Amino acid sequence: MPPPRRNRRRYDSNISHERWLISYADFVTLLFAFFTTMYAISTVDAKKLQDMVESMQAAFDANKLPTAKKTSATPARPLKTPSPDQQALEALKVRLSERLKLQIAGGQVGLEVDPRGLVVSIREAGTFGVGSAELSDSAKGVLGEVADALADVDHPVRIEGHTDDVPIKTAKYKSNWELSTARATNVVSFFVEDRGLPPSRFSAAGYGEFRPRAANTTGANRAANRRVDIVILNEATRRAEEPASPTDAAPEAGAPAAPAASPSGDDAAAGEAAADAAGEDAAPAAAPEAEAAQPEAAQPEAVQPGAVQPVTHP
Image 1 (tube, helix red, strand yellow):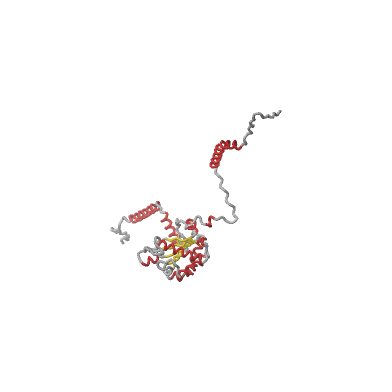
Image 2 (tube, rainbow, N blue to C red):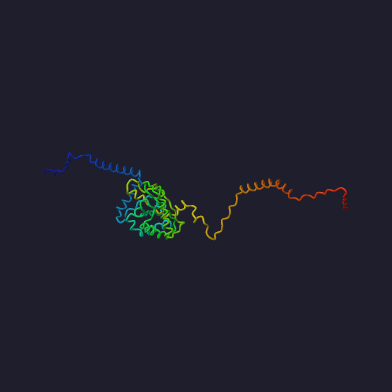
């Protein structure tokens, strides 16, 4: 009986013996990724790192929102509180807006706040006749409302007259200077004489055509420039333009008078030296006067011939 045959492995001649290269390539790839990561970490960008940390935290903790980024913004400046003077002018503007809302809507009156204070601008249309400074009835109605509002405050008021650039020469007004000044003066007279406001609060100025609001190129612009501005001055303007007003100059009743300024050391020394020099000059001059003031010494009487002279014994 023949012996049993052993199963022999059959080796395929096509099998590659370089399979180790696959593991080696994977290992090299991992090393490349590792050293690339190390290089990236070695040059840290703080902002990018913070963004990455926040995204990682948001990814791992869905309930936690990303932390807000810190900014280096400068703190906001505190709002400047308006002064009592500014608050009073703003309140006055509100009251005048209510009183003159019809005239403001019709374009006859304008209200604005500028660096000087509150300006009530009254247009010429319906206020003054052409080339005239006499107040019309409608102008008196507007000025009456303004006067009632001015009675509630104590700010000084300057009335400014303005015209356009059209020359004027009439029997009464020879130039726009005179016309603008006359209009401002008539408004002051209305406030003081007709409405009884204190005259010390008012002043009048005429600017002619030299303070226009718009270029004198069209009829509408010229009409806007023909106006009277009632400027209710704020405290800063009053102190800058009227430093010697009676309110500042007059002392309060019962206040002690300011002591006279004592001279400085140099001035006192100079005064004493002058007094000494004056005394030395006055001494010689006083001597003759003293001699003249002394009574004349008694002169012996002349003895006439033949007369007996009495002899007095000691």
